[in-house]
Image (tube, rainbow, N blue to C red):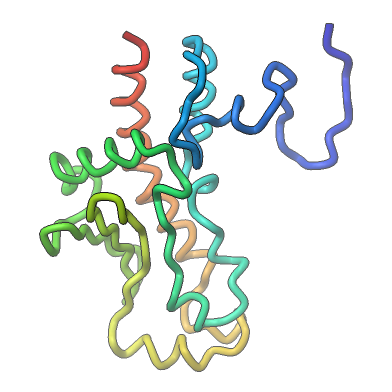
Length: 180
């Protein structure tokens, strides 16, 4: 039925689904038009990873872009997953290395002087980076990625690792209510 086909990118290509929406309905879509089979739901939830949700820090050209890095979670994830993410943070943030610092804000240290923060204000959920005061001028003045005082690859790895911990719990909880 399926012929071997060359795919230009080094990603797997699944011919069972005809569109990106069919493959990943939990990424950047609030509308799931048809009920998903258990296999489709499992596949779609498996696609919800930090590397698919968060833009890569290594693609940023300078320190100024790193200072304004923000991700609107509702534009990257299905609304039900964002709501589940907020529930995970409210109930078990510390188990996943996140600490509540304000009524609607959670923080996780990802490197010396750099922390990831998630604002859980309903309808405005977003992830952004926060920096130690001494680090801000150095980042602002870094004109090229090579001049950054911190390795963006290290920061990206640490950010993805911490965010994936949350997403793993979100996928587990979502699978529980989807599978029933």
